[in-house]
Image (cartoon, rainbow, N blue to C red; front, side):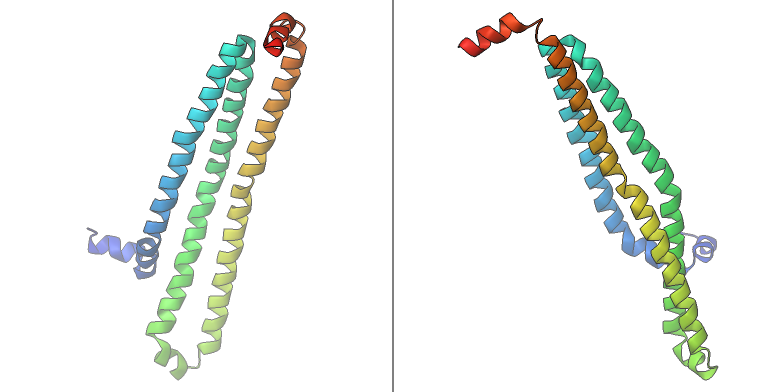
Length: 178
């Protein structure tokens, strides 16, 4: 429960925004946690363990890729978190304008401020759109960067395996003869 001081500090529009977007944020957070903290580590560490059985000298490539991927994800998160906060503040302002216009529609028309309120709403809405697009573009960099890192690790592994082939040639011949 919030005190009256907390309610006054947040404002009605901010509280309304928080209440309506909490479910969406919770769902996105659970989905992200399942992907990042459950599925990905099993796949990556499983691949590293399998590579260890094949040839122990290949394992360092996996751990290098894991470290690089973690660095990219956490860097994007550190950059995006303050930007998401700014976007949330812009959303609060848009909802404040909407709420003020809905509750004070007669007063606005009586004082002929309808056009100025429309301009203020459009200005706040444009600021919200710009901030959301900017933070979305930065967050969208995560996928291409991770693809580049993973493909780079695959190329490095293929290069290393290519140079290991003459060492394991008798083993490969016995496997292919079966």
